[in-house]
Image (cartoon, rainbow, N blue to C red; front, top):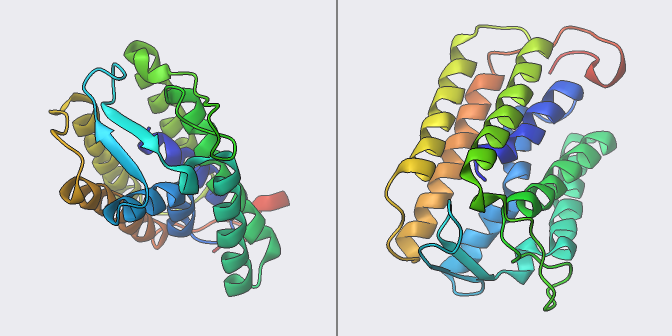
Length: 224
């Protein structure tokens, strides 16, 4: 899952409009993948390319306890949430950011084969939706586009930037789904993944600069 992870970011940005901007939520949504590919560059966590390991994804993520166990995801969430809370002086914003970080594990649990752990032990979990493309693809699209529509409905501003952002994200996802699979894991592959996350974050920041939130009741009160 790639763009599906940004669904909680759209929802959080729209539901708590006084909180961090969309780009911060985008970082939160993929924080553990940022960490994984960075650690993989240094050989601390490991993966390999195994064609056919799932129908949609050839990545064999066989060692990533520091980023993708439920415990480690919670630690990343708390740490990033505290940073945001202190930086923005907004405890609720920090909590919302932390929940977006944790959402990554929950969404991975749906699509991954059993390769996730609770605390790095031998027991592994994953529903394996990547083995059912005709289910996984619509689920990810509906999740992402539904959250994006919620963000648009809650905010005001030109439509061009959000559409460009979403079009680029969909194009990146299409390459991942239908393009040639990676030949091998390595520094180039890890850097490409980090570049994709960076591009998505820049697009989110660019989009948010052109959107504002009318005053509302509840979490979505006042603009950014």
